[in-house]
Length: 326
Ligand code: DGY
Image 1 (tube, rainbow, N blue to C red):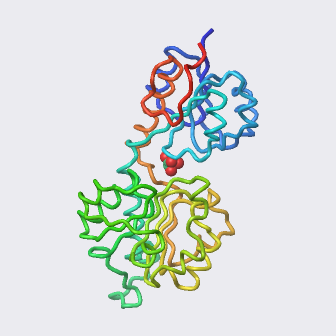
Image 2 (cartoon, rainbow, N blue to C red):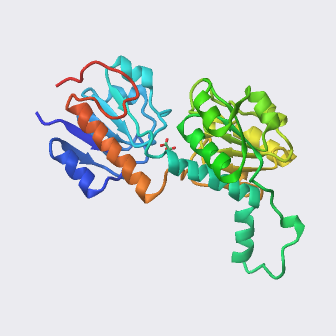
Image 3 (cartoon, rainbow, N blue to C red):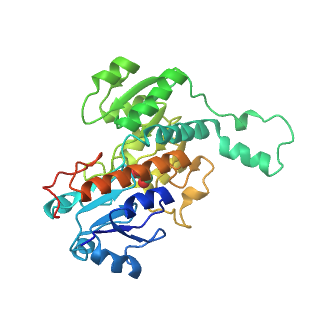
């Protein structure tokens, strides 16, 4: 029997052809709800899933009796119940490495835009309101030479810190579950406990993965520890931050500004004050969203699912399970 792969995010022709060589593909590239009847129908027969973003719940897995492997087109895997997948013998794979530099670019983009008020000022030009040299009420704040506090110092955190230390002469502090002596040597980075980092950094940048330990890691108490001049950036996951507390803190003036690529609810609801706050740069979760990187991520996902369903070692497994059923 030919195994079936349900693909619920766009792939290019070449990627689809690679899957179709050995497998039957149900291609539903525009599914945005796990309740979609077409998705649920295809799920029943799927041996493999290739997609991203949809919350994959145990109840959904109950509807996928043949499922052997999932290849997520993302590095983050907080939307999958990893322990439950392992218990059921379902392999989960992700796409690390290929998106590190692009996501770090996004992190630095947010740092620069928030510090230099680039979006506000570009809006002024676009609206035809640039009539004279701007006054100091529009000045931004320097990034070079400042102290960058990285909350999380994995691959993406390190790549942002590298930009800061080597490109902008920044002093780098980090808080992380494990010490990173190699990055301390490379970048002169110094470890701090989270509270000390928040108090000392000019720019606080969050890159930790979302899990039970990091849910609302940054809330009212943590914002109160920051400098009033601090710039807060989140390129990790929205739920790492208590968003209501962030809104209150920004209104109260500490931190001074924020650059956000991720939110507790995405897309950001119409009612969110973050959409209209002048000291907030909000992007629609574009961390890895370039042509080159999204292609590389989908390539990795295809390689992962092909290996997993062929009983080979995939390039980027998240969990460890026994041999897949054949
Ligand atoms: C990732 O790969 O985890 C990005 O945040 C896209 O979801």
